[in-house]
Image 1 (cartoon, helix red, strand yellow):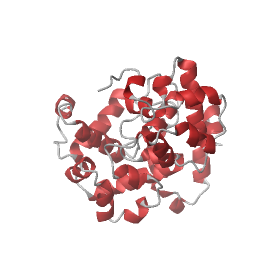
Image 2 (cartoon, rainbow, N blue to C red; image 1 turned 90 degrees about the vertical axis):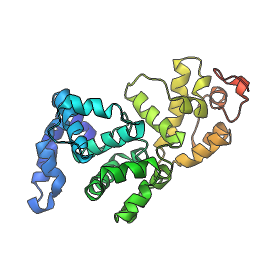
Image 3 (cartoon, rainbow, N blue to C red; image 1 turned 45 degrees about the vertical axis):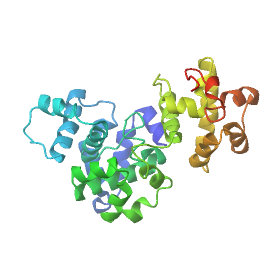
Length: 285
């Protein structure tokens, strides 16, 4: 229904209609935020510079920066920060504006949004918002850097809430270094949305994209993996384990109806099932 409203250009109107039929006391805080930020859905976005400046300043103030710092000073400072500190800065900036990362964002995998569907992404975003009200940027950054975000959530009383998200704990316990199966999911979503970019090297080597001879074979391999993620009972960690054991094809045959098995058997061979001399771009030691 939501997709139809969006396609017909009536999404904002329909959301308003449905919420206004509810008593004001039951509308929740998200609706008031929506009324102030309708541009997110009405295809009339804010000027990119204005939007970007808002989240940069929110993140800057949260780190303890001077609210009156000129934008050039903010940008020149954060550009010199380590990668993980910059990722945390961007995460805090957008969360404080009550957004959450999209698959195209560098924060989507390491902060666990990759484990969610569209509905639970919003719920997880809300929990992060509340966490940031209870901790400092230093606490948040140090927890992320040391793979201790789970402990930070628990220390602030959010342990039971995040326990409801399947696979989230497994991501946050390893973040910022996450299993490549989540990067595969990110690549599949971005590719389907028209972001023409190659898969990350870990995805290419772990899931067989280095075997593809042309775009058609890449699309065939991606279609098989998309069919896997489309299953309600898909277990990404089982796929990751199959990749580590070098038997992706055998595993996929058991959970997805594969077409053109001869080609997919070849494409699904990965670095764990081959000698280094058989992998393009890798030299044997």
